[in-house]
Image 1 (cartoon, rainbow, N blue to C red):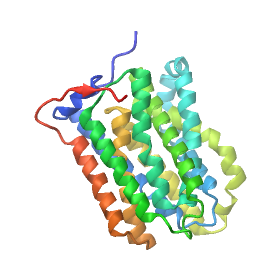
Image 2 (cartoon, one colour; image 1 turned 60 degrees about the vertical axis):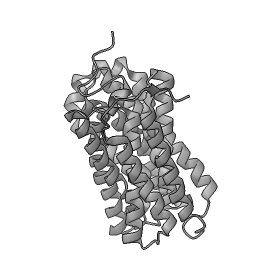
Image 3 (cartoon, rainbow, N blue to C red; image 1 turned 90 degrees about the horizontal axis):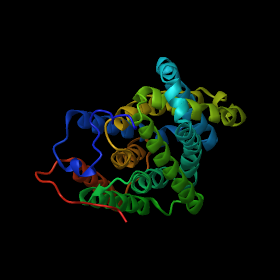
Length: 321
């Protein structure tokens, strides 16, 4: 028999239309914090242009993942048997964790910070919803579907506003392909970590096991490609920041979110990340965002309000077919 679902989880996604219980509200806030921290990665990486993208990804997610495992060490020991019983889920999530940063940072280098972030994060909600629908049989509300469409369309508008800058986007098609791979792996490790929590593994232990194993897989990549981090204090500071703040602290917040809300909802809320990335690119990096770009930002924010604010009555749920 499957263990009871964690507090705050509701199998029927139509309950998302009701007023959010405290646990769900905490999950939404935690996910917004994570998305905000993740949104700083592209700007931070721009300060170390001579460090290969795969080295940045390996350092950020690899070291950050090992730190996740370190703080969850007691929980990992206590739940070792349960993790071993669900090793297929754990391995799936760890492999996805290892692939994600390599694809994500390479996508930003090839297609630009904004487009790379937009494609990587924007494709995840639809992929996550498909995973939940096909594997778990979950039903998603019409309200969620409309909100996701608004958000994805907003990110498409934001990407179009940033297109045509070959100096910062040398290979947009390949960057988009890698962004789709990043979005797929993001959805996979979010879903697998959520599944571990639903099967009785505490949030910290589930995240520590998934990201710790994924971090171990990334260590050979870091050893082979990470020498440029030692070339300057700036490069070293960028690598340290990426590992400690967006990856370590960000994924602590994301684990809190996944223990309270569905992975499809969490990936939808994470659409806030490209908004943060675009804002920082304008304010710090010096990129200019045209009016079309601000329209895209407005649509993404509208998506967040549409999908998260409660409505006074429940609506019929429909499957995404």
